[in-house]
Image (cartoon, rainbow, N blue to C red; front, top):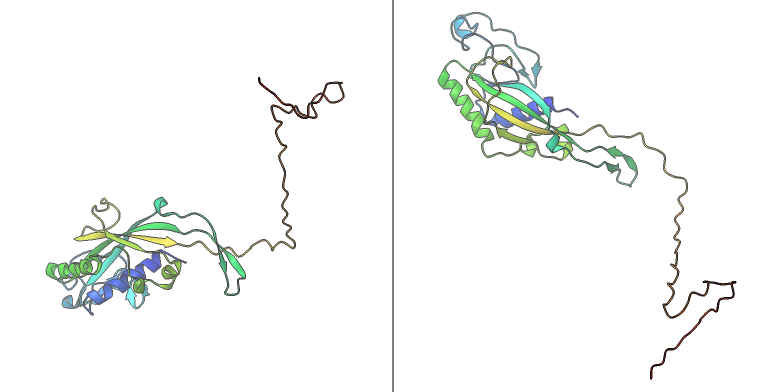
Length: 243
């Protein structure tokens, strides 16, 4: 079970239908320098070879390289933190269909990830259109749709919350200044299943013992045990008559 890579896949699955087919979705910052296709960018209009990108994920580069002909949307992971408010408590038993105990599952933990969303294209207008497409994809969503979640996140059975941030991460986080906005994602993480369990008990005995409390002595009937053996008279019954 992973969080960062699964969230990246989920965001690409969410954004892909809203973007032009020629636009790329890149997990990484845009290249420095002029826009793609501009002078000195190394793009098609400059006649130079395109800059090499980073390792591909699902057929798309994860960092570096110029934007594609249709531009590129860049998702930069700014930071990640543990979300103590999203923690659960209490282990649960995981059993097979026949009732066999397979292990115990520790409760899920939540992590908040913040992404800077920027666009890179041949013109500012094209970049704005890409950012608009991303906004359309996330508008009205409180959580990522279940059909966008990879198997790891889907198996957790918990929502992956999503919201547009109202405040931007302070400058100096290693991200070049560029127009964009930030997305906050709260994703669950299930710890590994605990399969090393103690063997079941060979014998279990259950018994019930009833203790009858002693009957309190009546105020008109002296305790039979009080003063026994010391010559004191023991009263069993008394009657009081008034004339």
